[in-house]
Length: 499
Ligand code: BES
Ligand code: MN
Ligand code: ZN
Image (tube, rainbow, N blue to C red; front, side):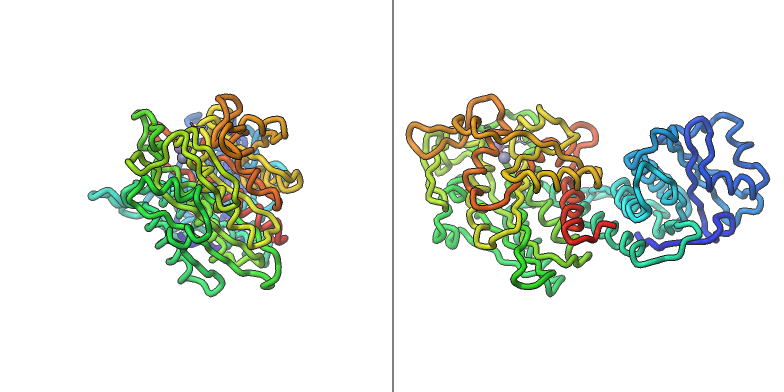
């Protein structure tokens, strides 16, 4: 989709369709009131009929209103004015995008960005309008043979900014929105691809393709042999049960001085998790193709940064493997030695994510990160605790945790912090090794993070458990692209670019 900023008088805008908001009980937004006046009260006359009340999710086209240059008016319900939060704004933009896509118009101007919501500013609303609209239009049909193409999809959207002049901040909102939306789209595609296509090798090829797009991005893929030389016994113990070779994907984005300490993102790239010898039940096992969504979010953030070019150094590390039962797979009770030298008793082979992450975390120490954040579909317990609303956040640094929580609120891609108190650590005691890879049933998300914390002692580290947020189950089954928006917001804020 093409986006451009538009200013001027709404009634005089030359476009195929003008999008206008209406609050609940037919309360006109300021622009709607202006258009109503210009047209001699046509909008109020229509609302009096009562079919359209301005409820959130409502959308209605009106045609050929007098003295309005645009032949179509698309009314979008905003819900009650008092409850018009930034999230309600996002929903209205999503609804507008689908209605426009269904219409015959291939180009439109939306006035929704000038609606005041909460304490959001115009930069944020422009950016979020693009992200929400693109998110609503997302379809995954790469694997369908007969896709019905829309005859006239929407191609170009003007974002109305009132009488205000264009300026660099507002232009940057468009670039940021487009880049973040593209990163989310990319992460969703990778997540939705099946395990037989999206293998560790496929992810590595994707990373290389990203690398060829930008001078600022260097991509390196470590093979099993190199991982063995580095002593990554935990990671390699997982891939031993699979015929697909493991890959350690390393992406180095340089946007700042060579010696500026980078942010490191480490994403779990488990392209299919059957559980290994501790095999999972059959029901919904297909969803374990999403077990690489942490890795996909890292690729998505890097993709966004390639377009957005933020002045920051960023490293993406994606350990990637399958977890399958096999004659050579990890067995419960096996003891493996991690790159850090610490030994691990594998009591449950289904707790494989932490085994591949721990070696990737140790590897990342070489970058002396300003902060390191791992992102992983790590525990079913996190789905139970927080559901699909918030990613679980655990950290050894409260300032870093605070920044991530704030980025989650600003981007609408929220996280919620869980404690990482010392007292939880003893759940990982092992009679035979330095630690077990699982605790007992209680506090599963926390004990998983406790495990990772033993490999990040030297760094400012945070962990995002995205098991509940990275995809949706049920009729709308599919990857969400979370937490790309949260992470890019965090990076933008770190370099002072978030409006
Ligand atoms: N990939 C799963 C976590 C998961 C489960 C994500 C359900 C989304 C939905 C992970 O590898 C796993 O299997 N974790 C185990 C850990 C347990 C053995 C301690 C789990 O959560 O059951
Ligand atoms: Mn597992
Ligand atoms: Zn897993």
